[in-house]
Image 1 (cartoon, rainbow, N blue to C red):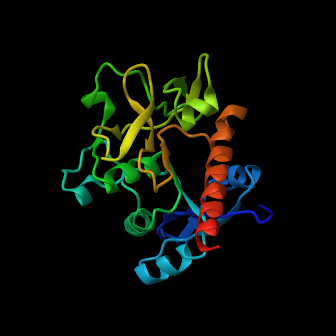
Image 2: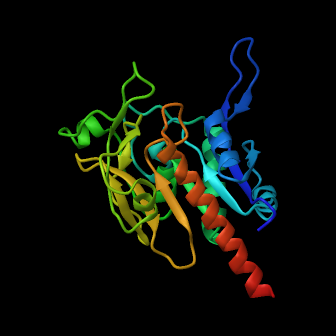
Image 3: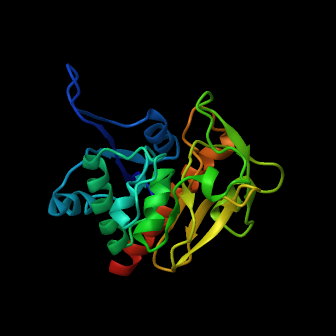
Length: 249
């Protein structure tokens, strides 16, 4: 295919404070990875208009839901744990509108970090709110002193993650204190940390190419193998475009 796919990407948001204006931003690793993988990133600032969001999604071929702070568990009927540092409500409201629309139209999606957690929650799964309490025997998944903290990964060979990493010892960049508890219907676990914490999920639905990674393949400490996750995603988006073109031909 000669035309590169348009890959949407949500953006973080920080409210105005003192002399600083409100602003929206995206860590460069996300859009640089999409560019390297052969896609064209289209960054969406937070919006609260479902019709406007739908209009934008009409023009896109796939979407990356980026990481960030924590989902507010109160939005899913749970109490706020003291360890939770919620996303700005402006961003979270938009993220939830985006994910609902993406799911309804079965748009190819890659969720990373918080993005994977939202994919799971939106589809009917739930989360551990604090690994140290919920899974006390787990290894550290976050190091405040090391943004490049890494841990090992066990992958399912028959999966996108398995195609990316193959055999051998795998180490990925990790910085989270929440994690998937119950996996959403229609998804399967395709990678775990050896301690059992879920690190990747993939859709089992024939009509939806959807992948989530709890670890961060876009970060500065990512390896060449990590970047292949974006290549696999863009390849999957291109295959979806080709399928849609054949249906209308």
